[in-house]
Length: 436
Image (cartoon, rainbow, N blue to C red; front, top):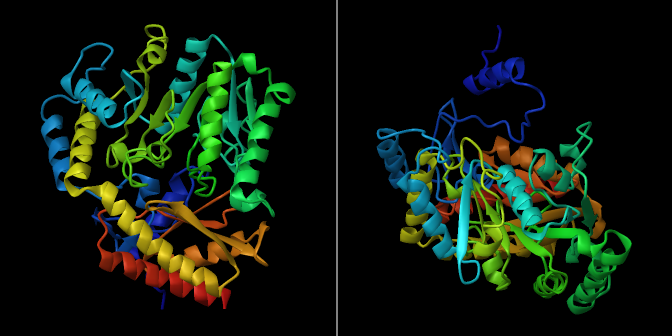
């Protein structure tokens, strides 16, 4: 008797037959519908979502006010192009973003569709504002997969046979305290890393040719690595000294994930330009670049943007998302979630040396797996087994890090304590099974 395939298996087989292999499969879950923090697959199975569409649904799947705003706007007009016909939702969203993410005395904004587009436009703005060509970025960084964004991205898995890359991009080590500090305490480590930064002005690129330094205050794909406070302060001072613009990429860390609208607000270090996407639109493709008005206005007319620069439907979704986040106080909820996750994982870390580090800010938590309690021995194989084991038990998870040895927690922030702890029970059980 031939065993009948599940609907999920059939759908995945159809995917394999028609979709290009280069489109990643990070998890084999399927979806028929989703609400809050629960995904229902095509077989009717309920899955707890700790991936959040790669950090896109901080406000949960299909929040009703957002869905209603989409319906309402879709009945009015879908597209005119903001370059051709000005519309209220674009203006209102820019005003809202400037209010919650102020950059100095006066802030200006632009909207596009994706995080990679935001990064591309931020670099163009910085180059025009400074009349300089070069950009400094970091190891373990991820900024997207278009040409400039891919050039800035560190992880080579995203870049195989994709060169040549954009010129005038220079990379320095990210101050990853867990991985590189050795026996140094935080202050000594930061001083060492700031000296590396200063040395780059002499040994890597002429600092007077550098337009901008771009950094994720908390790295996303790189493994949820938070930049040390004093390093970011020193980086800001370095940029000020040499007339370099500081760009902060908040695409994965923004919109309540860390307990603030942007993670740079935790640090109280002001960027000149910052980029956003993902949870801004609750799943609709929208992104933003914000910056000090005089810097943003340095870009010449027509040199930034594109045809789909802030779809009116996506703008409506983003406005409703921001209001929903305010109504539910998701910044506070992120702190609550982060404490539950961190407390449970740190307790588990005391039992197992294979858990090298538990780190993060707010609800942006990473759990790093290593061999022999050695930061220099990443254990991607163990991490992969845990992710797959969790998937089999109904928990959707993603890995991260250069060696895919970090489990990242990106659950919707509307998740109930009950579902959060159920998911953590599954994760803890799989860690015990695969380590033991």
